Amino acid sequence: MSGKAYLIGAGPGRADLITVRGLQLLRQAEVVIYDHLIARELLQEIPATAESIFAGKDPRHHTLSQEAITRLLVQKVQAGRQVVRLKGGDPFVFGRGGEEALALVQAGLPFEVVPGVSSAVAVPAYAGVPLTQRGMATSFAVVTGHETDSHASSGTDWAVLARIPTLVILMGSQRIALICAELMQAGRAPETPAIAISWGTTDYQRTVLATVATLADAMQQQDVVNPAVIVVGDVAALHQQLHWFQPDGSATGFV
Image (cartoon, rainbow, N blue to C red; front, top):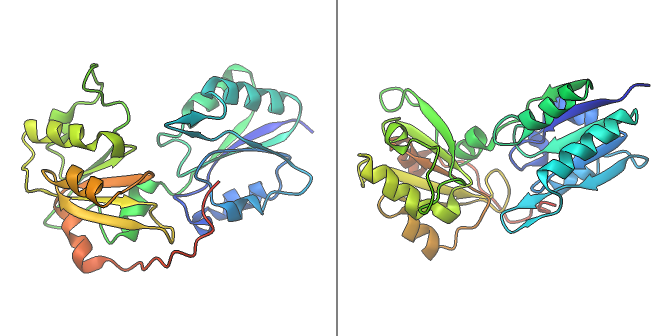
């Protein structure tokens, strides 16, 4: 049997938010290369005969470099294996899925992308924050906060993003003070509602509602930790009326 890679999005945190297609393929895998922040329950779905390889990365530690992960993926498919590359959220939304797919194409290997529920939309929903709202926000943008550096040029045009009604910032917790300063300098009103949602969709979920001017201090005071999704815009204030999810702290956690 010829090998094939499946780039699967595991969803935003809850095990039951993976797609039906993703779960089906996971249960049939011969090799699973999985990331950090995958619900532990999903690992129980991997066949006992399959090879499981942890390739998680966080800001402080990389088990494998991205280059090593890509080489491993290609090698396993070349060996004729059915390989699941299991990623948090969606593989094509800040998940390096495009890079891995290009490497497979260059090696002449078949692959399939199985979209996942992105944390960019799911986490705000679990906090009662609709990204669009009639009469309030007709568009939204998703941006990574990870590349922002006060000592280096950034490819992110905060002046443009400051004008978009709803801004979703992923991987921005550590630099939120700088990001908010950039937005205010670009014209975003300091009193604009802003919310940080930590461990969204899980039973560890926590939220901090503030403003663009006060969010960084509020996150520090309440010890909001990664992973966190930040939403800037008037819709963030709807959290006060629409928060429906009641975490109970009983989640088994992530790998």
